[in-house]
Image (cartoon, rainbow, N blue to C red; front, side):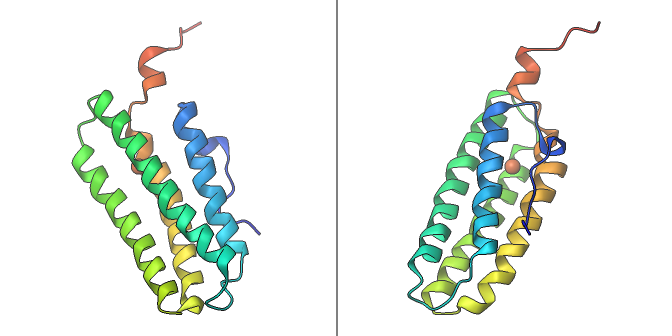
Amino acid sequence: MSLIDWSEAYSLDNQLIDNQHKKLFGILNKLHDMSPGDPDNRAYTITVERLWSYANYHFIAEEQLMSDVGYGDIHGHLQQHKLFTEKILHLKEMLGQGEQESSHELITFLGNWIQRHVMMEDKKIPTANNLIDPSPVS
Ligand SMILES: [Fe+2]
């Protein structure tokens, strides 16, 4: 069973950010379905590295969008992104120390966290699409 299933409910009406969220959900689902196994499990470690680099890449894009649209609570939002990346760093450290078993719990935490974050925080951002293309009322 997937950790997070994408649905339109998560959409920000911004294709770029929506696609990035889908990809992020996908990496977390992949990790959730994988067994961390022994410390030599390269595939697991590589996927955690991918989560780390993709989350950073995505947050930079989202922070750029917030800055472009002059979003008011950018500071508070950035703090939340920092918390998420710190948790991934912790995950990397755990793997480096051979604590594979406890990593599964952290993956579940990250999955639940990103779901809540998209629904509660990202949805507050007036997206570029909304600004450029206000749908005409018919
Ligand atoms: Fe965000």
